[in-house]
Amino acid sequence: MPAANVDLPTVPPPANALAAVVHPNPYPYYQSLAARRPFDFDATLGLWVAAGPQALAAVLRDPACGVRPVGATIPAALANGAAGDWFGALIRMNDGPAHAAMKPWFTGRLATLQADGATLDRLRDASQAACADAYLAQGDTPAARLDDFVFRQPIYALAAWLGVPSSQWVDVYDEVRTLVAAMAEAAKPSPRAEALARGHGAATTLRQRAMHWLDNDAAPGTWLHDTARSAAHDDAIDYAVLTANVAGLFTQAHDACAGLVANSLRRLARHASPGAVPVDTGRQALPANLAVAITAVGEVIRHDPPVQNTRRFLHAPAVIGERTLARGDAILVVLAAAPAGAAPNDVAWTFGHSAHACPGRSPASTIAAVGVQSMLDNNADLGAIATGAAYHPLSNVRIARFHDDASAV
Image 1 (tube, rainbow, N blue to C red):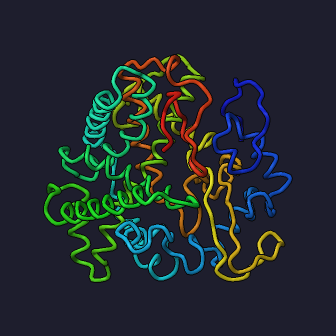
Image 2 (cartoon, rainbow, N blue to C red):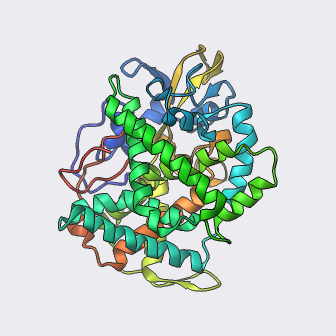
């Protein structure tokens, strides 16, 4: 994989695959890891690490490898609360019958999200609203506004695309951010009770919102309205699971789409090129800034992807990469270490692979491209605010950070 940050000064390589996520240029390290230790045990992390493309594919398709530890579908810190109930209903965090029953139907519903001209107009309006609200939240500090925007814009745009009333976008963003923070808190050795409590409250509110959207709040012709009608005609659909997964679309977009937007803006700031001409799609030429944005997002997906790691847990003994793993072993799957284009059908590794592959590549890419376009349309001085080498302190998702005093996600 070509280095995304070739213009940065040479810095020591990351200490391990988790530290690589926030490294200024982790790709030489990833390339070496994939070549020299494609599947091996890292004693410093206490994890098996899969880095070579064959090892990644083997782990992600092995039925013995689950997305949650054995007997721990819900993180212990979230159990016995609304956030735990919500987490336990997410199809992307379940294996077996619960996943198999809902995933194909939900994937089919997501496939109906089409980026036609009217949709792009709605997404641009939502992105401009996110830009305005980022200003209200952060004031006159451009870098702080940009840090706010890259998280806020995907939530507003997704809400607009699904059919959530615009009057709710600010509150939905705050609730999603609170729930994401609670999930991060739950992974800490000593999680703060107040952060978990706020997460339980946010989970309750988001699921109630999703229920109202599906019942009557969403306008006819919107994705939410049509999804509710489809579910009503399918006795196999569990309505409680559906509302949880509608809310889950927002939490999944929070970090992953923010990474697409932020990393694309940083890439544009570092690799500025002459303005693009409108692209002819065969139907209508794309605006120049949208064409630039689409190209930048595509390059980031291939060369500086947001989701860099995922995890798998052995539900039964298995042999992977000629190594024997025991039930209960954990694997860090370094998606960012696989060369661009190595996955079947050129599906980017950052969106996963096999049974738990994310079905949202197309809508996520569109949302991110419109977010980048909004910054370009607003004549943001990317060279002044979007360079640097800082990333939000996350262990799995790579998100460029622009403000020196930006708080941890």
